[in-house]
Image: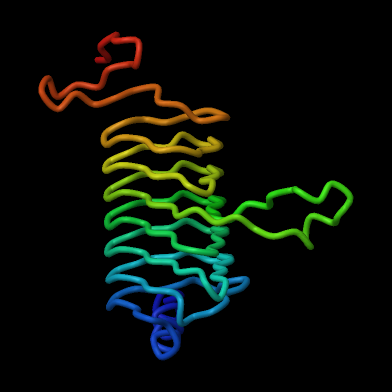
Length: 187
């Protein structure tokens, strides 16, 4: 029953957003800014307590059939794309902006921000509590381990974990097996 209410809320949002696909819904959010800079595909499911912030220059694009757990926090100053069929667990933080900390005696909130696009590829899985930092690009079918802090460019079909995150496994499409980065085969 509650998801029906979320769908009615989605119908309301549709009038203000750049696009909002059919069968999409958002559980009761904490905060959403600049609706016109948000574009959600079909069957996007965002669970409660999301904080979705798009600055005037920011754009957030979420592809079709994406599921996002509760307590998402996403901030965009330029462009964030979440590919279709991706899943983000609860408590995930994604930001394409960073403070530059150039004024050593100046309050950090008064300093300028640097922005670098983020792209999460198709059919990715981002584990609980992960942080996706500015400039990150995940290829298709990537898996991000729980509580990982990710920054950088990662190829298709890999498992990324740690702080800082690094590739720990890759999928070999020829042998159709997962391999550790040290070359050891996994069963």
